[in-house]
Length: 248
Image (cartoon, helix red, strand yellow):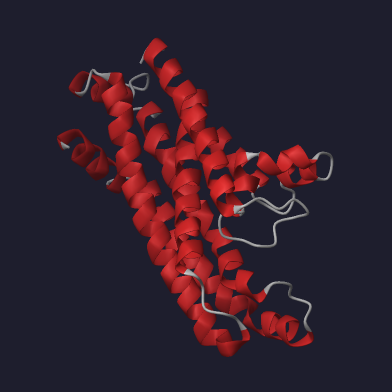
């Protein structure tokens, strides 16, 4: 537990991590207000689709916060420790204090999970509450299971970013790929137009845990959660294997 607390303090001490936390907490609720006029018109003329997805779709932009947290939890270890030692990295100091690499990775993952889970819960409650306040009876109240699915997706996406950054040891590349793939030109989404199997890619399948309208392929929420968890576990396993065999 002491190692988890140390990693939690380290994560919360990073400026970039606070950027991720603030971005995750603020962006989604702000989007609700920005989109309110257009959303009201779409709901009124029946062009919106499933109204129960409204609040959950607004959460999408906030996932950037989970990605940033997952990336900086690792990338901060590979940055220079100072101008006097440009080749030095924080990881060397970290491994000196915690030489058991598997315990270090587990502690980092636990600290990240805790922070992202709190962020995801607060953002989901705030965003869904605002959606109900702004649109009232036009949308149904969110089911607790769907809220839990959204928070789980938030956590798994943060861990996915954590694993990919560990594999490539480059936060800029990882964050760029994740942001591009979660935008309007999502590679995963485009692949679903080529083969339905692409719906089981981690970023797409995870959305089925809480959204009802996710493309043409229908996947049960529990199945979606198990598949995304398997993806994250596999990537974390690969990342841990590589981390054990690499030099600091």
